[in-house]
Image (cartoon, rainbow, N blue to C red):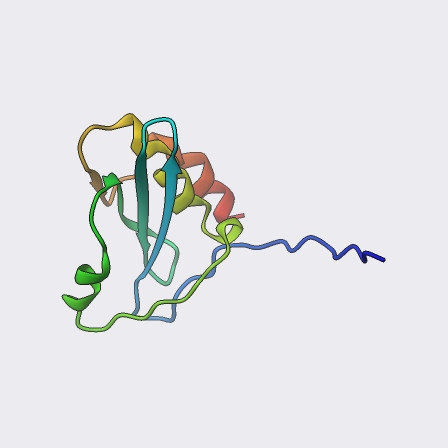
Length: 116
């Protein structure tokens, strides 16, 4: 017998005061044999400081080694919709795209929904 579990209402959770949180998501595009990555960096108030999307061809592990303090924690996609949307949109760009203190149009609605 299967027991139906109630669907979790997952939301983005801000980092502690004084920390920044980077949500990262990846997606594989089978039709083009490529993978995309999306990253959003926010502060403890939820303000978007930077976003990035690109087609991935390398490991991101070396990036974490360059940071003074870095923690990894798995988050379900439902609580990381901005990074997921960026990763899905990476296929539309031939080069890495980054926005600093600016929100790309493809995620503006998703970020607005996170604030609700």
